[in-house]
Length: 82
View 1 (cartoon, rainbow, N blue to C red):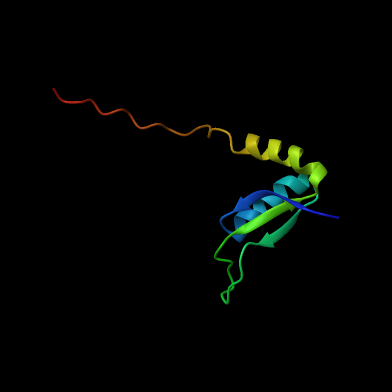
View 2: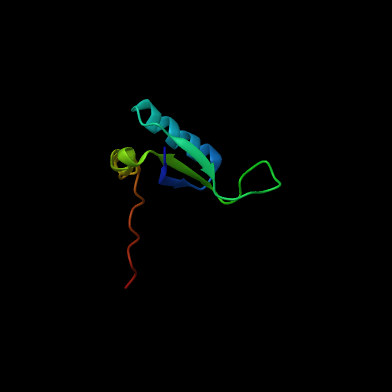
């Protein structure tokens, strides 16, 4: 089976969160590091892969997940002095 990228995470924990989010909804996922390193953490990020027929569904759910934040307080605008 071939797999296609649906998300690029900056860190491995972020990739695991996205994978869990998708797997809860029945989407099969794999994680693939985007680079090798001698350190325990991948410095170049991690790709979240899905089967090609799931890519549109996964992209739709991830777009909805990244929607505008709710409950965020906006700072008051500063008045300009004349």
